[in-house]
Length: 551
Image 1 (tube, rainbow, N blue to C red):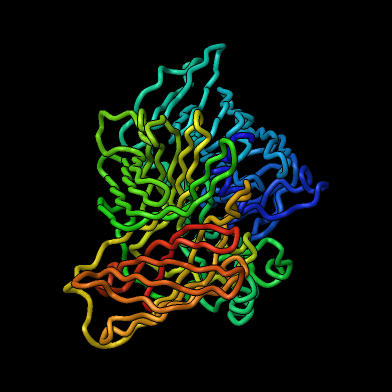
Image 2: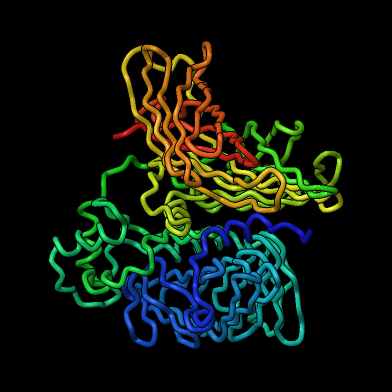
C-alpha cells in the first residue's frame, strides 16, 4: 500500500470541486472573498469569478482579494499590490502539479495546498525567489516570513531556509540569517490583509436595488442571512471565507461590486455578540475518527476520546492534547505552549490556528508525525458545499471550535484520521432543571469499510431537542453518508455530559454518541459538542458534532 494521504491532502481532496481534464490549466482558481477594488486585467473581481492562466491581479490602496486554487492553495493579495499567476497545472487524480507566481509589488500571503506539499510552489519577488513546501508564507517587499512549513529564499546566489515563525529580508541583495520577525510584523500583516466592510477602492456605486441584492445573496448562500462583512483571509489548509458555490452564474449579474452591495448586505447581517478575536483560553472536548492499519490485512476501527486545546495569544502558540480509546488507549500532543519547545504551531486568531505533532512523540511506542488544524464556520460551509451538502445546518457556534487531526507511524503503517471538537465547558450546576431547547448543527466524520483502504470525509445535519426536566434529548442525524440516525440521549449523573445510541436506516448501521454542553456568549449551555462512533455491515467510522441552541 502507498503511504496514506496527510491530513491537509485528505481535507483538500474532500473539498475539491470536480473538474474536467481540460479545465486543469484553463481555470486556475476562483476569487473566494474579495474587496471590490481588486481587478484582474482591469476586470472587477466578484465572488465566483474565474482567474485565467497568465493573468495579473492588481489591487488599489483600498482593495484586497483572496484567491482559492483547485488544489486548495490560497493567495491573499493585499492593498496596492500586483501579483501575476505565471503557471498553474494540477491533476486532482494524482494530487500533483506546479504553481509559479510573481509578486510585482505589495504584499501577499500564501497558504499551501496539495502542490506545495511536493515542493512545487515557487514565488518570485523583485529581489528573491521563494520555494514553499507545505506551509504558510507572507511576502511584503523584501520581507519574507514563514508561518509554518518550510520556505527557501534565494537572492544574490545565497539561499536560506525558513522554518516556522522565522523571517528574512533581502533588501541588501542577499537574505539575512533566519530569525524571529521584527516586533509587530505579523500583527501588522494580519491587519493589512483584513479588508474592512464598506471599502470601495474608488469603484462607483452600483445600480442594483436592495431587493435584487438580497435575492442574489439567497441564491448564493441558501439563506436570507448574508455572509458579507469584514474579511480576514485565513491560513488554514481548508480555506475560510469561501462564501458561495462558484457555479452560480447569476450572481455577477445581480450583485454589484460596490459600496452599495456591501452596505445593503450588511443590513441583513444578524447582530452577533462581540467575541474576542484572539483570546488566551483553554478549551475542553472530544475526539473521534478512524484508525487504520495495513500490515498483513487492512484493519479499520472507530476511535473516540477526549481533547484539550490551549490557545496562547501572548506566545502565539497552540497546544492540543488528545486521549483516544478504541483499539487501544493512546495520548497525542500537537504544538506546545512551552517557548523552549521547537514543535511548530501558529495562532493567528480564534478561527485560524494549527499545530504539528510534538517532536519525538510515539504512537503505540512507535514515533509518528502528524498535524492538527481547525475549521472555521465559513470553511465548514465551503466543505459542506464541496461534499455535495450545500444545505448542511452548520453550527452557529461562537465559542465552540472543531477541526481535523492525523497521525501516521511509518514503520508500522498505522494511521489515525481524526476530528476534534472543543468548547468552554458548562458546569453541572449550569444545566437547567426545567424547560426545553433545540440545538442545531452538523456532524463531520471519517468513514469507510472495515477491511479496505477507502477512508472518506462525510457530513450530515444534527439536531438535539433537549428536555431539561426529564434530562433527555431526542437526537436526529440526517444525510450522513446517505443514512439517517435517530435515538435518545440522557444526561449523565451530576454532570453536563450526555450519551446514547442512535439507530440508522441503512446497512445495519448504529451510532454511539457522547457529548457535553458548552458555554456561549449568552448562555452557560448555549452550545454543545461531542464524538460519534459508527458501525455497520462492513462499515466503520468516527467523527464529531457541534451544535448551538436555536436563536
